[in-house]
Image 1 (cartoon, one colour):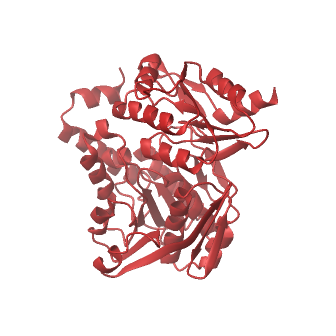
Image 2 (cartoon, helix red, strand yellow):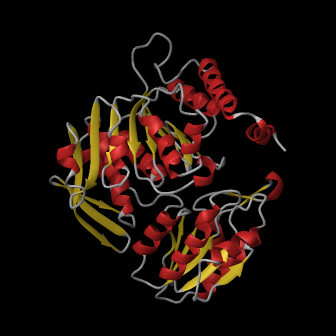
Image 3 (tube, helix red, strand yellow):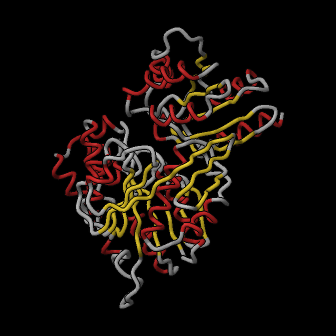
Length: 429
């Protein structure tokens, strides 16, 4: 049993919080509070943007990074997909969207040393719970959406939401909020010098008048055809080579950040229209003789959004069976969703950690009432089975791991993994 597990098991909560807070302070001291200024004695500030929510964080980080760079800025960014400092980028193999305190402060110090003027950070509820956000001077914070996740860890949905709210209560200058989300009201109540809301024009009309001084970015004329989507903001039409209405919201979040910093819609348009895909996020791996798509979706809401966006074609679904040691409540829910939307269901292993993977898969299958399904322990064999079952008109959708490069099994062992590479190898055969 490692030191982190021992601390969590035996240390009182207030002492555990103090431990995390102290490490956050020490990290900031060691690296010289890098988010405060560009180097010693210089006046130019590192502008830090924090993106939080249940879904869309990594895509929003990617979008805003591209827009800022298109506008001539040097940008550092972190997400569950990758890390980037200026022109250097590398994959995130830590299986954490927001790594530990020393990592974050060192990352920001490196950004300052490389003369970046923006840092765009994915901020998770677990990160906030462990004070990884402390002593980072956020200028802009963004709320994408909220649905149940990490419920067992936080002790309930309200606690989970409250962790997200702590980022907004840290008093950043600008708050940017998805006001179509039913939890938006809690984030709108927090204090800020400047508030922006983003939305689809057909929704949430009542909030426009109830929140004072709320600046709005609204998308209209939304059209989703094949693997492209388009929408209009004011007189500017955006055409993006991505799937799903949820990517309209991710784009709106990024455009709202940019607009709050005085960046034109035309610059946003030029940056976003060059995006041809996000690794592991509705990523089309094969187009012929049938489509094969890999996505990170691992919560019920994410999974349903993915299935809905593809529902015009029969779906062959490889269902990542929910990582071990967390959120057991959602396992049968994932099974029910697969039954509702999928022509063929293949339940397989994901990241079992120290849980029995077969038991996890059986819990997912318990949500399936009358639909024939397959339980395949070996994830590679599950993918092969899906490819063999698929016909020309079908879409194979593989969910749960996205672009992750590791699978976590018992006793802390991590093995190399990539759903996308397995698809390419098997299709090549």
